[in-house]
Length: 217
Image 1 (cartoon, helix red, strand yellow):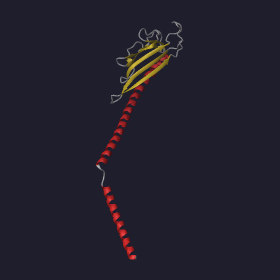
Image 2: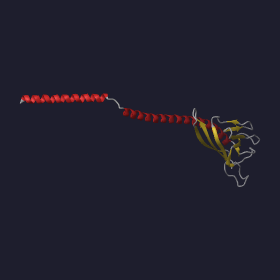
Image 3: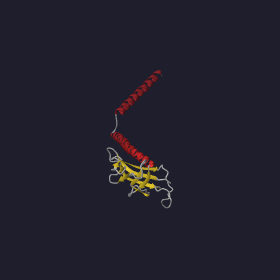
Image 4: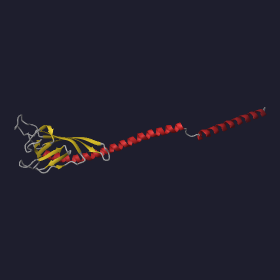
């Protein structure tokens, strides 16, 4: 009886060893098998899609960064120009909008590209300062005391349109109905700024208001 048990245990041990050897052999074959052609194609396709998305996002960020720098350069230049112009207008008087005799006050509710005024400290005998927008060169010019107009905006800044609106320039009741509004100038600017090493352009819209400080009702 004991001999039969020994034989059965030997048989079961042999079967276990054979099964373990068979499992180890096929697991080694599975590990050494590698990737199939279909798996490689799918992997390359997924990698290409991910890289395409990443490169597109990177290029978009670079383009946006260039536009921001171009717009920042434009705004810095225009801020210096407009700050000086608005400061002079607030301290000035006798606003005139449009063509004609610039030493005579004149409103233009519909807007114009020419604006003139007497700067602080000048007299009625002095020639007013004149700001003129030139649609040909797309730049803003300033003439002081009848001198040669000088461009006050950088050449890389393209001003597509610039309009001056003036209201309340006439004092008191010299005209009918009486003018009870304080002289005010509204400047509206629209333009573009080129982006370095790119055909893209950044657009900007600016509106500035300047009210005469000298009481004129």
